[in-house]
Length: 196
Image (cartoon, rainbow, N blue to C red):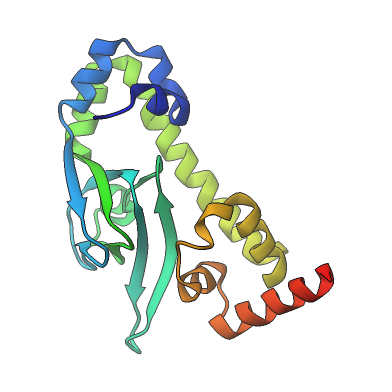
């Protein structure tokens, strides 16, 4: 069952919608249940969907020319994700999407969503909210890499996502921060020493 009150809290634009509007919107979604380790979107895919994490944890990663996995984003409960390359650039996804633990997603095809929004102007703020949030997050990440040290980026990460530290393997946290797992370990030791 979908918790409308939680949706209204996470997505403020839902507060402007009637129950019928919300039901009409959600009528076009489907629930996808995943096991830990399942990859539900592969590099090179052209499936244009928006994924809302109802329960669980997902990561976005690519495999580089050396065969190394590089994680660039993590999403958890009440967060949405899509692949901008597919949706905005009409190019194949550069990333894989994988469940890191048992996960339940609410999935909607982007074209279907655009048709629904076009037919109901009250939903347009929702689309703008999603696009703007994604843009702000991307720009903030670029700013962090330019302006913050690795330790400052780590401290910001644990301040903003304390509940994720015990859910995400260290190698993925290090990837998101743009450092090696060894550097992450040194940063943690340095912070622990300062606290003593």
